[in-house]
Length: 161
Image (cartoon, rainbow, N blue to C red; front, top):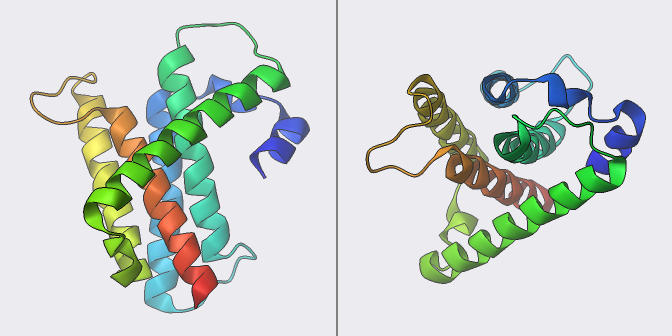
């Protein structure tokens, strides 16, 4: 989906400040929570679509964290290379954590993934409000990666239901 949208729109998202990307993820997570609580959606996009959106916006966020100061326009090939690199780093993190946690996520509810994403968003916003500085916590990038993995876990769980 990211690649097709990249073809349709190019890297229009490069105009977004990193904080705006966090807010886009927040909108998607709040919509998921609203649908979970109301049990119905009046817009054509599903919860699955929103988790995919969160995943993709997190990758956009990771790219922007690295390249925000770089005003160059990147080619579609460069963007996809950045995307693939962030995807692979996040996948490797997921595999390491799955090893340690024994795939405990398989016992979780979809609503818990939503809540964890919302918690990570609150943490990310606080770090952003502190100009990216933390004392003992992981940075914005780690929160984006965790949200990506929670989104994947939710999608796998939804697919298995």
